[in-house]
Length: 160
Image (cartoon, rainbow, N blue to C red; front, side, top):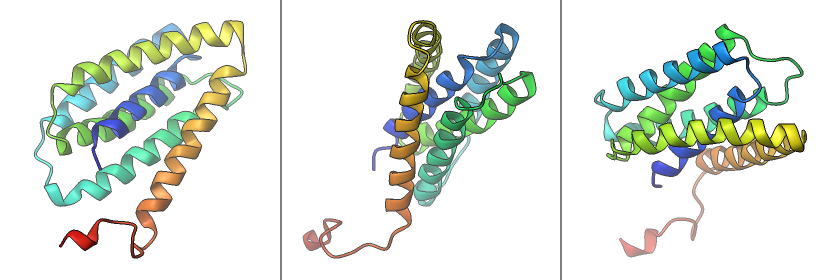
């Protein structure tokens, strides 16, 4: 599986999670996310950890997207914790994909998702919750497929 899509989905889920946070929490969260993603993206991660990195991305997506459904805003501590977890997962996925230039795209996705989610929440308050529910469903499906044993015909094993 290509690791760039999970990294971008983590960024989108984190941007949506920050959308309802106060300005200070958003700033701290964005900076912490970028630092964590950059540090982990340039750390050596063994190629054999690809499945674990993908699982961490799915967990980060579910966590960030679920925080959209909380009735209260995330504070500075909450945004910091989410930022470190999501940044580490996204940075690890970028490193496994060997596409460190994707850090720029991840940064743009976080910013765009945060701004778009804030604007959408003002006009249609239910829109970010619907989109975050979709992200949760996709992440849970991907994580489940990763944990289910491989059956004949699921992977291209006939090419061997």
